[in-house]
Amino acid sequence: MRRFDLRHLRDEPNQAVLKRLGEILDSSVSAGEVVIFMVEVVDFDLVEQSAEFVKARGDTLMNSLRFNRVDWTLVVKKGA
Image (cartoon, rainbow, N blue to C red; front, side, top):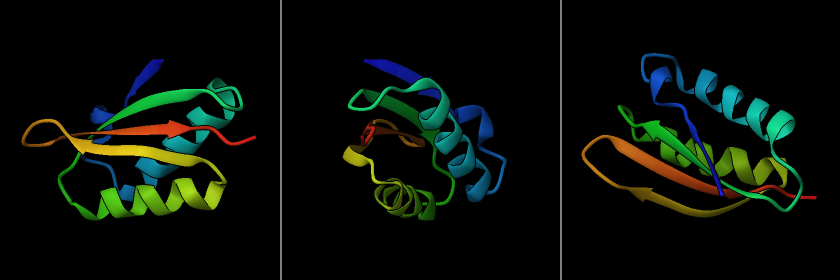
C-alpha cells in the first residue's frame, strides 16, 4: 500500500487539495489498488468534501481517520 503526502498543500484551498488527490488517483494508482493519502486538516470541511469527492469519482473511501491534532489519513480504493 502506497502513501501520498498532501500535507504540503495545507495553505491551499480545499479544491486544490481535492484536485491533486484526483490527479494522483488518475495518474499513479491502478484500478482496485488501495492507497493512503495524508492531509493536514485546518478546515474540517475538507474531510467531508474528500469523502464526497472520492464517491463521486466512483472510488471507495475505506477509512478516514485523524491520527493527531491536525493530520488526517484517507484510505482510498480506486474504482475500476
